[in-house]
Length: 215
Image 1 (cartoon, rainbow, N blue to C red):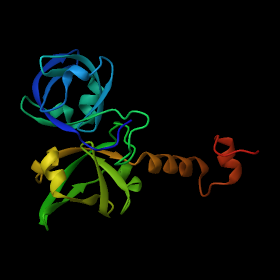
Image 2: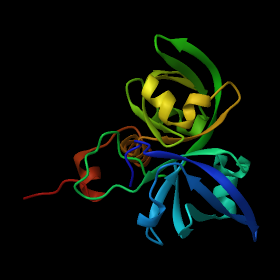
Image 3: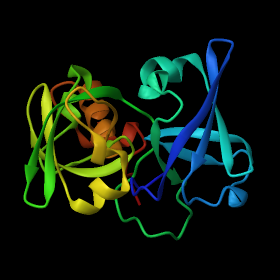
């Protein structure tokens, strides 16, 4: 589990194909690679990946074909910049929102405009996750926790402050840039409940699915 607060950026050092997947090796700018534990999870531009090697200032992850096909990782090349966040520890402050590192869809930056000292991005929105994105709700864009400024049927807006532009890959996002999108996990579960319940959700439905209960 992550918060969507990016702690560092890394550059792709090399990509080695492996049985349809790939081993990705990154060089973080500031993250202490020596502190990483083999097997721990790191969000790489919003994708939860497992540390398989580390040392010499480098950290490596394996990506399976499913990950390459459903995220932007398939388009990474040596030199590509990646947002990095270590997994949340119990007791940490939740400064962003709950992010799982499970990408729902890939979006594309439609437009970018200066807005005060920051910038406003309009990003395309795939139909399957459109119902999960609401104005003033939360969304993770390339692993960055953001508030939805406006939401339509096929696109949404986010307003980026100077800190976000300076500390994440979104500072370089331009029309045509592909980004990983993860909808709010709470919205995902509410949508699933509505799907199972049909036109309405009753107290009996919630009880049957394990929510609530009698005392």
